[in-house]
Image 1 (cartoon, rainbow, N blue to C red):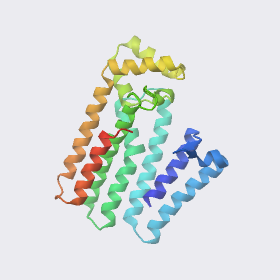
Image 2: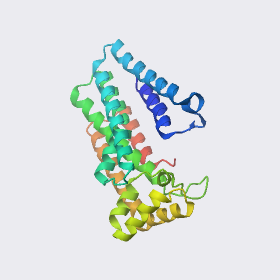
Image 3: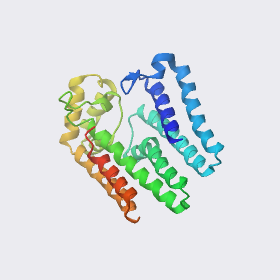
Image 4: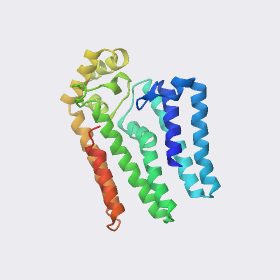
Length: 252
């Protein structure tokens, strides 16, 4: 059910982002255009929902339907705010909570629900997934500013796509008005210029944007770990701790 939901969202994301590739292969919209891609995404989503209905797993149906709603709202919020580049830190967390973290939260909640755990445990696991998902997204944000071993320099992809991520938001809130306007002007009008993008990356590093994002990521890691530590020790808990450590220490 979750895999069908995830795949459906990836198909729709490629349409929204006008992406021609997905993990090294042509995307569905590249092969068969947007109309077919939207319908394929809808079909996959409906199959996931029908799985829950067929087995009368209405708790799972609620978890999945809520995830679809949250992810759609997060995408719409990001599109709305991207036009003005006026994303505050609070709005940023709203977006990543809905776009990224809600899927991981749904995975964790579904796992607990599928083995008959009570509502309290299901909610606790949902919250664990949400915090892990936010940490995961912040780690992704940091990759945009960290030197890539493949190309030898930071990618700056988020800046080129005019995405406001946590290191950049922190920097905009830290610098004086003149420099803030200069950075926003670059993102609005010169986001395809390699040198100007590199200048923005340097400013984010100089003004503590990366350190701040790492601190917040580690705070969410700790919060998620605190939730896990309310459970008794077993192999499942050990696996989730390893997963959580991977989220913040991964290299790609």
